[in-house]
Amino acid sequence: MKFLQKLGKALMFPVACLPICGILMGLGYLLAPAVMGAEGATSGAAYTIGFLLIKAGGALIDNMAVLFVVGVGFGMSEDNDGIGALAALASWLMMTTLLSTGVVGTIMTLEEGTSKFIAFSKIQNPFIGILAGVIGSMCYNKFKGTKLPDWLAFFSGKRCVAIVAGVVSIVVSVVLLFVWPLIFGVLVAIGEGIANMGAIGAGIYAFLNRLLIPTGLHHALNNVFWFDTIGLGDLTHFWAGETSADVNWSLGMYMSGFFPCMMFGIPGAALAMVQCAKDSKKKVAIGLVASAAICAFLCGVTEPFEFGFMFLAPVLYLIYSLLYGIFTVITVALGFRAGFCFSAGATDLLFSASLPAAAKTWLIIPLGIAAFIVFYVVFRFAIIKFDLKTPGREDDDEDETKVKLANNNYTEVARIILEGVGGKDNLTSIDNCITRLRLEVKDYTKVNDKKIKSAGVAGVVRPGKNAVQVIVGTQVQHVADEFKKLAKK
Image (tube, rainbow, N blue to C red):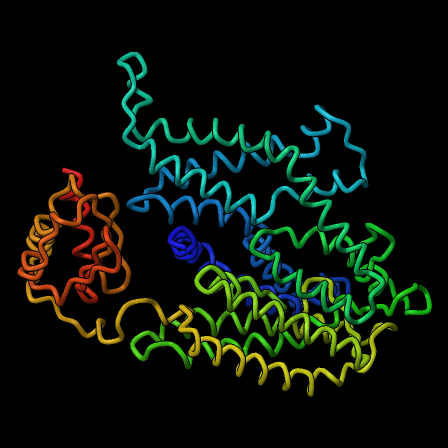
């Protein structure tokens, strides 16, 4: 759980880059619909501006996995050191190169169009990105102080981190060489198994699609249902202007259910998160989830919303995925049909509504209202009932942002706290949140609460045998910076 919390915190760095992507791409598609294959002008000022906006937004959203590499590598490294991010990037480049179709095809049989080929063609995904980030940061934390013989002294300390990460990445790549196709193949087999289950099958697909987002493995299912991997191709046939009479399933059934959830369900869930946030942190919550909700409504970019809470509250993400499954079953059963080229946002709905396979698109209004209400009620109930740590509901006490540090000499405050926890040799981890200095110690008996409080802090909390949290207030970052400097001396 502690690992997931650190990972969730680290992912906030790349997630903060994503809202602008959705906004830019949504505006771009409105100005230049022809870019996504819809009818419209392919020249002129509006087209040029729209094209540039789409490309600007796509520059980040298309490279989201790389953002996770750098963000996790930086965020999970002790002291948030950039060397961890550099090592993570080295790990990413090595793994994605070694597991590319060109390299894999050289060392084993790899026929184009097979499940194994598709698996390795999708190796540049968020799961591998997060894995590379973890490798880079863990190698930094473990080997940043390594001392080598004099003749290798240049590579001592931080300089050896990327080298170690590279070696680890080779080993991991060898494992993935055999494991990755199996994982991908299982997902394809699942897709084939539910393809003939009608509306229920579409609901199961939608549930698994959302559930697998954190790993990037949803691409396997998408290839089954959206493209012509096993003879379906819901997306390709829909945009080719065909109808259900041209295929052996109800065309659009594997895309339609996403529209009410992304356009209206996510804004409802976002509203619940904002209302459940602590009063002192509502602005922070609004800044994160409101922009994410706009992204989802306009063009179906959901990652800014999903990665904002999936690791903080995994149970809530499971509920979120279930809601997608339920609404997809209902949407398909009612006969609503729409398709998307990019994702299930208002822009794609507008452009797909004129295609032959589109049907009962007016149902987006009642379905959307229902999705907004259900997502809002379920999220609000779950967050409050289970005290889930969604944005704005971190562990800090609500009144801690009002705490005033009695001594504004941050260096002196840090020195006293360090002495109170038994000195730098008694520390194993240093971190901080909005109001607290979070420390891990070797010997809890050396911690002197009275000494720590003499620094002018508001209090000391012992959440675990070796965990010490010092309530500093909003000045905690200044104290933490000085504390880390003293701990290094």
